[in-house]
Image 1 (cartoon, rainbow, N blue to C red):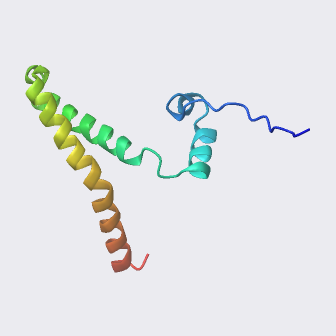
Image 2: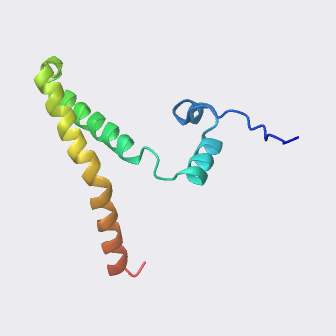
Image 3: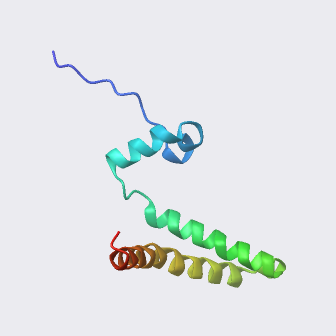
Length: 99
């Protein structure tokens, strides 16, 4: 007879991070540390763009589909490029400061 290892099914990290954040982050890093990084960067950048537009006072214009598409595209461009640009700047400043 063969023995089948019984692993408890893991819940989605999108849900488990609220209840067991430490275990969720450890599991993500152990399995695939780059999982959904660009998706999270896009979502955070889009949220930042929407927040900035709301603070400026153009919240009513955000409901038009063209504006939603523009915000999504700007958030995507900013969200995908900012981790790489920030990483480069941190590396560069670390070399200058010999860190």
